[in-house]
Length: 279
Image (tube, rainbow, N blue to C red; front, side, top):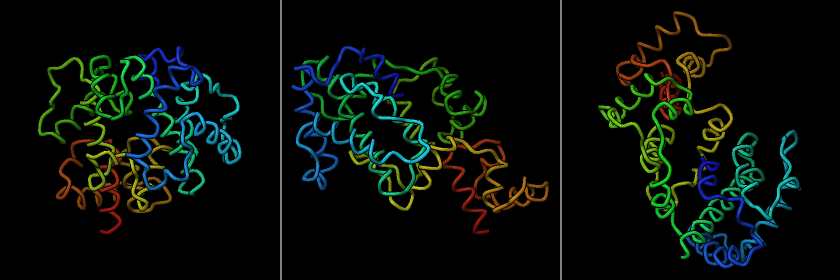
């Protein structure tokens, strides 16, 4: 997703050392930190370039063992070359405080960088995620086939997910959906129901659910019925026919969708797994 954003923004044009970049990042960064990380702002650098430099040094000193990623290889003059690496970072984050700092450091860099580039292109400061969505809704759209591929399911399964979630597929006669629609659907499928946020703190992960989202980053967005049963019954081997029968009996009444599909988005999978564990 970040790579898509940056490709539309022609990111290679922008160096964080250029006067125009410094001008707008100096406006965007303190506003972003004040709005999202106000309780931590006294411990953060006053300007974005200093934040990037400090984070680069912190990353090099705290990169987890075995991580196939080296911040020193990144070209910080063109920050986009580092920004697109967040997906690589999620491959080795854990619930340790050190690695979560790495993750959220990248998150801050991504957001401020994209807001800064949009500000440059619009020639006025842009501060909020709503402005990002408005900007990209006119430029980025997705086919349902592309979404199905990204979410590791076939087109028929995606259609069933949409029917289950919204009573009918709201995009059945649409060739494309825009970015705002995509993010709303993503939120419904892949963010735990009790933790969905609508305010500016929507990206903050509750501490007790950190392991769930880390597992998502490492494993992927979907679970098969076999995986749900294995985890729910805490099996060491593949589930047997008896296990499938037991799971169907336990889950079908409370979760009617269980019988309709064989692959589940992770938010649904977790509720199924937890139901089996407390059977």
